[in-house]
Structure formats: C-alpha cells, structure tokens
Length: 365
Image 1 (cartoon, rainbow, N blue to C red):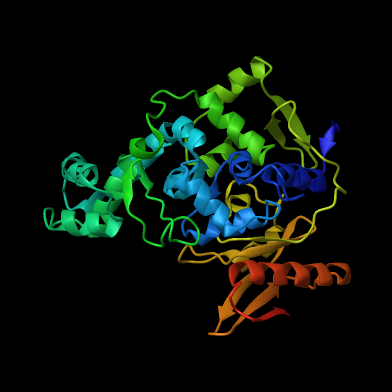
Image 2 (cartoon, helix red, strand yellow; image 1 turned 45 degrees about the vertical axis):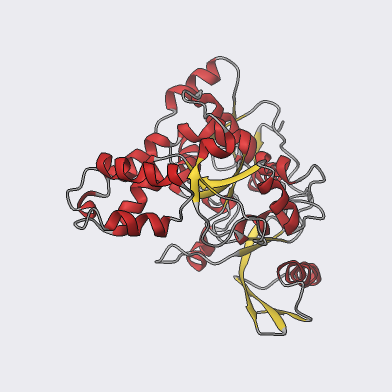
C-alpha cells in the first residue's frame, strides 16, 4: 500500500468497491451487498445502478431476485428507500432506527400535537391486516388525526415501523412506482434486534471506503461511532490511510486499493446514487467546482455520468411514442478519447431503458 493515497488512487479505491471499475460477473445480489445497498427512491434507480455494475444485467433479473426474497426495498439509510439484500436488511435495519426516531421527533408542529405513539397504535393494525401503500395509510390516519399533516402521519409510520415494499411480478423493476408496504418480518423474518455497530463501519468501508467517521454518518445518517472506530483501530480491525491533502482516513486492511491509473470506463449513474451521497468530502468523485451543477433546491439532483472515474456531466432521457433521446450535458469539454465511449455507453443505456423504441439517439452537449 502506498504511504499516501493521491486523489486518483482514492477515486479508484472507492470505484473498485462500488463495482464501477469493471462490471461484475458475480451476480446482482452479490453486487448489491458489495455496494452496501442502492438508493431506490424510484424503482428504476437501482436498476440503472445495477446495469452499470453487473455484466449482462436485465431488469427481469431484479424482478426475479425481488420475488425470491433475495433483494428487498424499504426505508433504511438516511431515512430513504434503499435496495438491500435480505441478509443486509436483517442485520443493519435496527442500526438506523435511532436516526429515524430523531427524524420523527423533528416533525414537531407538523403533527399538530398528536403523539407519535398514538399514530403508531392506529397505523400498525392497518399494516398487519394487509399490505397498504403509504398513500392509503395517510388517508386512513388523516381521518383520525385531523390536526396533523397527512405527510407527517405517513412519515411516522414509515420511519418508526420496519416496513418493506411488496414485490410485484408485473412491475418491470420488481416494484410498482407506488407499491404497498408490509411488515418486514413478513418478507425477511426476524431482524437483528441488537446489531453490532462495528458491522456498520465494516459495511461502509467495504462498500465506499476509505473514509472517516463523518463519511459513515453521511452514508447512514447514524450519529457517533467515534468510540467504535477507535476500539476497532486498537484491535487492529482497521488501519489509517493518509491522503494527498493530509487527511487521515480509516480502511479495512484487506480492502482493494488499485493504482490511480487503473482503467475507469464511462458509467451512467441514477439520481441519488450513493457514490455521490456517501462522503462528507465528495472530491474523490466530483470536482468541487462542479458541485453547483448537481445542486437542486427540491432535493432532486439530476442523474450523472462518469468519465475517467469522476462525475463529468448530467444526463436525461426524453421519449416520444417511437423514439428515445439521451441528452448529455458535460460540465467541461469531453476529451476526444472519451467521446466515442460516452456515445456507445449512452446508446446501450437507451437500449436497456427503452428496448421497445426503435429510434434511439444520443446527443452530447
């Protein structure tokens, strides 16, 4: 291991763990576990993330894994919907519960003085009766707690109860856009009630390291962990890595740290991909000068693409009845050597997203 990791080496270390240097042939369940879960605010998002990480990925593979119970979708890291392996969800879900409890306490006036415990007492039987969408739960609870905002009532149920979305074999990505929730135990069995917080640190570092305690917090939303990482260092479970800018990062002794000139092909990332959300300092994947390009006041940053391992621009797809167009918006001129690869990868993305449309076009700039 080099004495100091320069920016390129830090970038490659993280991309290697995320499966973004080479597409994996180990299968999508392995990749979801290795990536530490994938953001799944929309069912299409993890499918795009998997397409960029798994060799030969098909959306039907995700449907099959969801129906088999190998992959699940529910509220997890940072209080947002994530795709996890069933094993990871069972092991990690209760580690994020304290942070979700704080989110509920922060609802304050939005609950109009209603006790969250009363909301849970009313909401829990609804879900035990049958799977329900959050919309249906909000409507039912709003009739009982008129002083509270319906969205706040739904958040209490979604954050305080351990729920998973019911998979749907008719949905292209495994779940409908508005899928019903059911108690997690119905799909994955009993959760680990007292998980070891060291597992959280190891899962972050194996998926997105090297990093700091602040990075683990950015990824998970979980506070603290300083004492945990200190004890892990003392026990030899972690080592310290120095970066080019003088920071000290934590890492697993046997984690991959490829050379900085390891090839990194063009990759397309969905909105909210954890690669962009999981570090307090994101310079390992995006130039700080480019961050304003993905800032968005409504919390809906645009999807991005990588060139030579770094975020180089944003993308969006526009469709008609017969055609799909991928519009690429670079932050700076695309190197000539990367233009052909970018267009080729973009054409493949369109074929994945819209296989039934004959007309497909990639526009750069």
